Image (cartoon, rainbow, N blue to C red):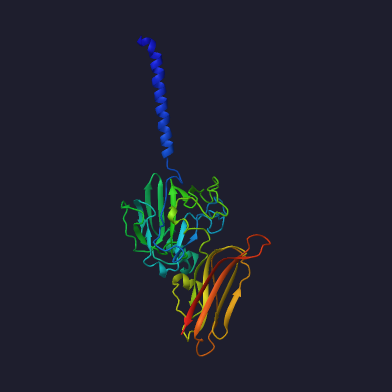
Amino acid sequence: MLRELYPLLVFFFAGVVAVIAALYFALVAVGRDVPGQGRQFALPIDCAIGENCFIQNYVDVDPGPAAVDYVCGGATYDGHKGTDFRVLSAAAGEGVAVVAAAGGKVLRLRDSMQDRLMRDYGSRDELKRGIGSNDCGNGVVIDHGEGWTTQYCHLRRGSISVKPGQSVQAGHRLGEVGYSGRADFAHVHLTVRHNEEVVDPFLGEAVGQPGDGQGQGASCKAGAGTFDGLWQPAIRDLLAYDRHIIFDAGFAGTPPEHNALERDHRLDAPQANSEALVFYARMMNLKAGDRIKVAVAGPDGFRAGSTTEPLERNKAVQFIFAGKKRTAERWPAGQYKGGVAVLRRPGEGEAAKVIAEKRLAFDLP
């Protein structure tokens, strides 16, 4: 009897094993963590996006010599592997916390490099001697498990408050915003990696290694106003592309200078006897063909302003001001108003439209 049933039993148990194996591998496949699946990151900086901090550069998703961000725009540069969250100036970075974007364990860190803007080095040779191959400057790398890591760069020297092997939660303070390493402005550079591959947090996809000629990398999404990506849903609207083109504006009592503003944006407000009275603005990620209109007006017919010629190329940062030097004993008392607007043509032959503008006023006693 058993001999007669043996082939049936073998067939039955073989089928059971096959079903169990299929279920096992299906479950493993479903649970496999790949870019964009089940991962969410918080902001790596404790600031108010659009008020005192802004995204300057995105990941370059093009594996070749071109520089392309996640919406097929130019707000990046060739080989850029992270997202740059900038503050208004080097001075403004003091006390602004860099925080963990997700929970994990600190892998490694560096906290010994000086804070010095690239523009303050006298030559490329001096820059190379100053930072060597440590473009990241002072930084922290966190392991989030399952092949995921985040890297935080350009932190202020002496500010890092974690140690290798330490466990951290999302929002845990790592250090402060600085400008160590290869930094042309004060910011924190965040790189997300999965299995050593750079991942664009806006696309949720791994990108090809820029310049290696292998693969196509992540595909940009032209005109994308929203995105899925890896950011927490609560902060996605804050990170909308092109939302904060004009990131700084104000009045000053002396003609401002761009490099000085990158060091300290806190200019002295005009006084009755100031040598000049100007309205200035700083913009970022402008496109070739954009025009900028700036104007300032005040009591007793005070007027100054201009409109630029179309930009010949994309500009990461653009600076403009309008005003006058004092020719009388004092500036007229009253209210002064300043405004700036960025004009862009939607398409060839179409009329330019205002895509960003800012207006301010102040009262001079």
